[in-house]
Length: 197
Figure 1 (tube, rainbow, N blue to C red):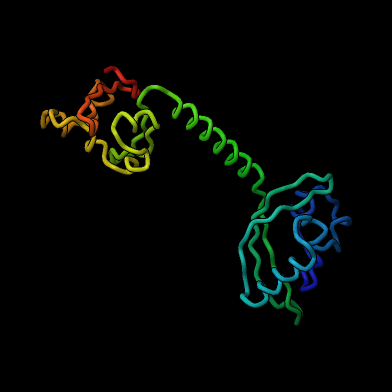
Figure 2: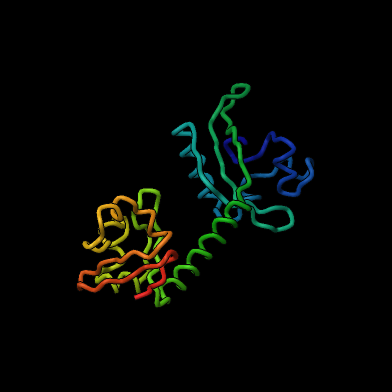
C-alpha cells in the first residue's frame, strides 16, 4: 500500500478473502474496505506508522458482498524502488472473535444461573484457590464474593478437620467436607458443591 492508502500489490488470499477478483481488488484504497474509519482517521493512522515504522492492531474490513470481517493487522514501512510503502499482513480473525463472544455470553449465562442458585457453587484452580464462588455461597460464609476469590479453599475449611483431611484436600471431591463460615455455622459441601447441611 502506498502512503496515500492505495493498494499497489497483494497476494491471492488478500482479494479472495474479501470476495474480489484480482482485477476488482487492484487499485482499491484502504478506505474502500474499511468502512469504520474516516479518510482522516486512516491518514492519521498511516502517519503514526510512518513515524514509528510499524504497528499491530485489529480492524474490521467489509467484503465485496457487504459482510464485515474482523482482521488482525501487522504493518511496517519499507522502501521499495526508492519509495516508502506499507508492507502489511492481515489475518481474518472473524471466527475467533465469534467464538470468544459466544464463550463470553455462555459464561455470563452460567454466572447468572449460579448466582441465582440456592447452593454453594465454587470453582477452584490447580493450586486449590477459589477462583469463583456464587453469591449464595459467599453469603453463607459471611463474605463478599470478591473477598473470597483468589484465596486458598483451606482457609474456609472447618477448624475441626483432622490434619490428614487438611493435607488431603482432594477428598473434597470424593466426599463432603465441612466449610466454616465466619458466623460460626458449618456447611457440608458435596462433591459438586451442593449444600447438604
